[in-house]
Image (cartoon, rainbow, N blue to C red; front, side):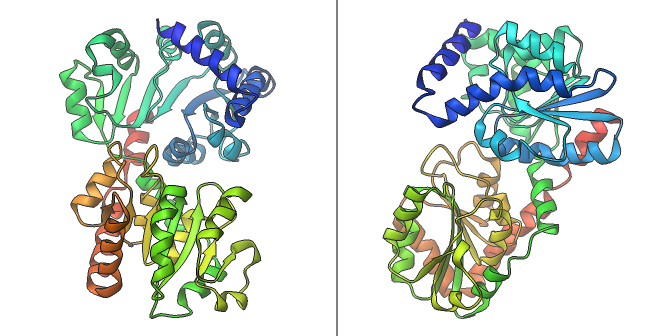
Length: 408
């Protein structure tokens, strides 16, 4: 049944690919995978295979990849993605040796992939449970791990009708999970190869914080009027912008930096049509003309993690869609983080809410209440920011733990 579902998924992807760019990119990329492996995998070398669904999972795995590169040079690294949003951004990532798409989880494709890749170790990141890949890795006696995993009772493994699929969890030599609730849930379901070690994303954002890029234009913008508070809105979607832009328009004591999730022309025009105060695109900004604007729109990729450092408050988008984007990227700078209501799957969101470093809103009134507090109470702003920053600092170290467990 599982393989039939995967085959149907692949069939649908082919049907919609002429009309859906991500499906088209994925299919074209998968067609190149075997050629990439034949050309670049060296039979005499030892390979660790990392698999990330998309960009967020890649960022979680990146600290461990970098540790292996520096401390275990005898290993090469193969990195695969399933989503174009990961592959297209990181296909030239210099920290690994080979990058390609992961073919659909169909038996023949799995066999060909593993025959060509010949991994000595396989490491999956957070949410990838491909039954055929994992079963073949087990049969081939390839040590296999999942890192930064998190489990909830509503996941398919724990449904009465999916008992067979639950066995996929036993294919891992070890499951490195983020929290004790995940470990307890697994143990209740007779999955015992579990270690609680936290989330490697904390190590990643701490690394970014220590190596953050200086952006002189944003630094000048954020400091040109110290009586104003700068909100950085990162990875925003239309529903997010419909909340914070109207508030910004009506509050002259607030400045705004928007780094939207999508920066195509249509979305940028949509944003600018809503702004009632002076703004400029980052690509057109200089230290002179920013003196005359109250909003900068980041119309470029790759700067978001460094942009948050120039805010006093962060708003992280996605919470009115499939789920919030990376709130730790903002929290690491010691600023409070506001986000939408869909954060159920994110442990760090629950933790930040609990310690008053993160604030979930369900509508514009919730956003207004939080911003009014931060605009009128410097102490509340300071305390919330310190809570967020301390939380990130205290939760680093998962990468060290995992590295020692796997490699000794």
